[in-house]
Amino acid sequence: MKSLSLFIILLGLWLLMSGHYSFLITSLGVLSCGFCVYVARRAKLIDKEGLPLFFFPRLFNYLIWLFKEIFISNLNTAKVIISGKIEPETFTVKASQSTDVAKVTYANSITLTPGTVTTKIEGSMFEVHALNSDFGNDVRSNVMDKKVKWLEGDQ
Amino acid sequence: MDLFIDIITGLCFFVGSLFIIIGACGLIKLPDVFARIHAAGMIDTGGTAFFLLGMILQTGWSLITVKLILIGVFIFFTSPVTSHVTANLARQKNLMPVGKKIGKLL
Image (cartoon, rainbow over all chains, first blue to last red; front, side, top):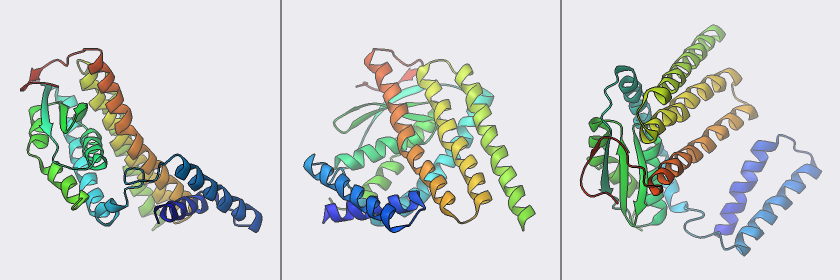
């Protein structure tokens, strides 16, 4: 089941990237996608982590929210750099997600929003570096943590 | 209509280059490696996003649009990883960030 969905995703990607649809080239594409799935199966890469399908239903909503956050904090970072109001601070936050994929998503989301970077991870504790106390308060308010918890669903 | 799309594209490129220039200034101006990563992250997200958006508006609906979106997706997944690796390596070499430290660090 997981292999089949990986095959469909790979084939869709291949079809979009190629742009040539003659019989020979398409069959070569199907063959190479099949070979990739075989190698991934042999390497035992296809599991909950390698292909987190349980994210997909809520991913779109989350991405829209994340893009909005990234845009806002881009503006704020630009403002801080221009005005020179730099008071860096380092602190730890706790991630409430249960799966590793969700923790990685949370850490990556923190890093993607400019102004905050995850510098170290141990278990479910993240060490976060923020450019300013405003950015720090954004992370400490745990809004993003709850969003990723919601994205993860009941796992 | 073409003129309208051209104007929007120009605006996107303008905002994107503004983000990249401010990010480049930040790379020089900010005090240490951890703070500079924020400026680099700004170039990665704001700069590339607006440039890709402008280019997507110019190509219209075709396979090239899909490829541009895929470039965006790959940058979206790889840029936080590189930022985190840089910051994590600096922490492993026992570099402490300047500024306030709240609570016990890991």
